[in-house]
Length: 164
Image (cartoon, rainbow, N blue to C red):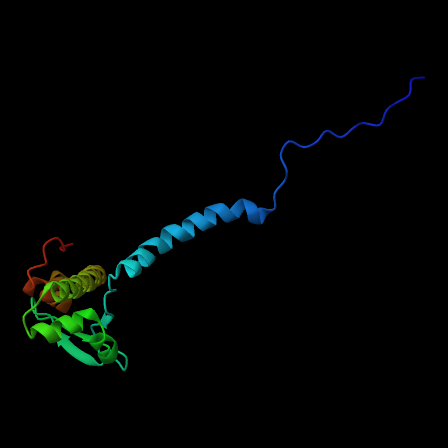
């Protein structure tokens, strides 16, 4: 009988790595991609946009109006006064400059997006209500009811593609 040699282990070509080290590089790249714009803007001295709201609250306590469309919005008084937009406003008085115009354009666009969503939901609700009523007269009454957000969009010249 021939001597049997115990099987020899061949060295593994690839070391097994822990799950952490397999996931770490992609997570690091993802984190850098997400944080890069913020970090670059801060290093370059680009200010962030001041916070604002369309309804008054304890935090958003100072009422303002955009110079373009006259949209009412609220800012946090102390935070806004320390922002470059407010500093520009203080230097130039009521004459809008680039930073203020850009900020207020952002406010107006956010307002229009919010109104558009409210208008769309209002029109959809009217369609549901029309489906629940029986007579043509009742359906016409539902159709005749105004949707305030749609009327505001129309006043702003923005109500184009909202009909259902």
